[in-house]
Length: 131
Image (cartoon, rainbow, N blue to C red; front, side, top):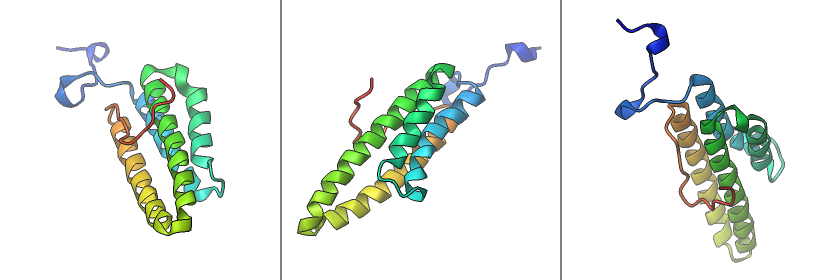
């Protein structure tokens, strides 16, 4: 019979998952990117994600990797939003900005769900500044 100390949290595919606390903080790194919706500051999502990642990155490899991914995505979103704002002058920017908001919201939600399950997530259309 297996003792509690021998039990390993096994995820999909039989691979070992990070501890629950690491998964929760990693999901938090993704979710805090949505604070830009509530806080009327253009880079609120980036600032929140960056601060949380800098504080918790040494608490686990999974938090560090997902925090980097979330920060990179928030930087990419800021760049894409600035480009959309320039394109507002020719009307297409309004449509692109709306699509960007929907894409960002859906991506952050999916990433946080995956991170909470212990599955590393890579954002599509993300420029990876921090390796």
